[in-house]
Amino acid sequence: MNNFVLRLLPVFVAAALALGTWWLAENLRNSGEPAVVNSPTHPDYEIGRLRAARMSPDGRVQTLLLAERADHVPGTDTLTLQQPRVEQTGDAPVHIEAERGLSLRQGEEIQLERAVRVTRAASAGRAAMQLDTEQLTVRPDDDTGSSDSAVTIRQGDSTLSGLGMDANNSFRTLKVRNDMRAVFGPRRGAAPNPSGKP
Image 1: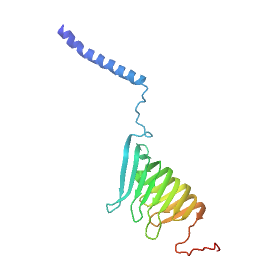
Image 2: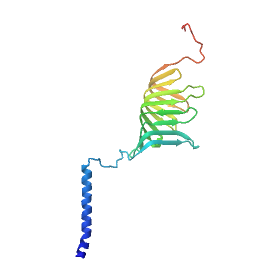
Image 3: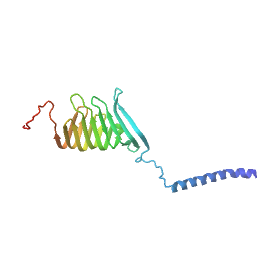
Image 4: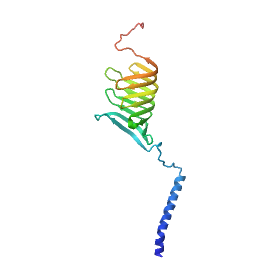
């Protein structure tokens, strides 16, 4: 009798495992939970409160990328960013913020969208600058940025607006591509003209 039970024990164990596997599969199917699928177009991990730095050749922090949340998409090796901020160091530090963004090629290019605002601190002989647009592409290694959208730039008492722009922070140059409009404030040191005549 004991030998008979011992011979049937593996059969009982295999049957129990098969029944358990079937029960688990049925419950998962009926639970309404989506199946986990490894896909190159779906995020494979997320990072809360991202803080990533790009270093200069001499070991200093050159660009700091921050975001409330980042999701990694394996197929394109990109990070989708929520509430991204970009900080660039230098003589006139630059701060950039937006509602969402995309980091490509490990931060070589950062695409920002929705309520993008760039502020550059004042430097020797230059007032602080603020730029507002809906789309901006930043290339930290080149210290450049570009936009195909409408832009508004304010510096001191002057305002410049237009469609599309290219900027180089190293050389302090900014080019508005189309439909440029400018309003310049009074020159520094200009004598007041109480009569109002030219």
